Image (cartoon, rainbow, N blue to C red; front, side):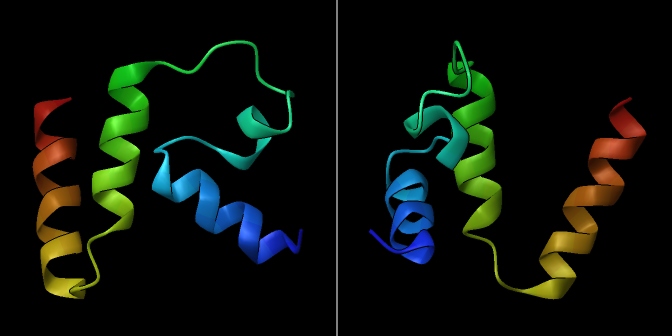
Length: 58
């Protein structure tokens, strides 16, 4: 499997390639879902707005 195929598979399952390869013990379901959603955002203005909102919450 090519590296891009592994990345695509990991994205489809909302997990990291390292997790699929057995390098990570557990995958936090919240983290996996949030990462999957964030990776799907392609509009730069939406990405910037979300980053600002996340920083404000912390």
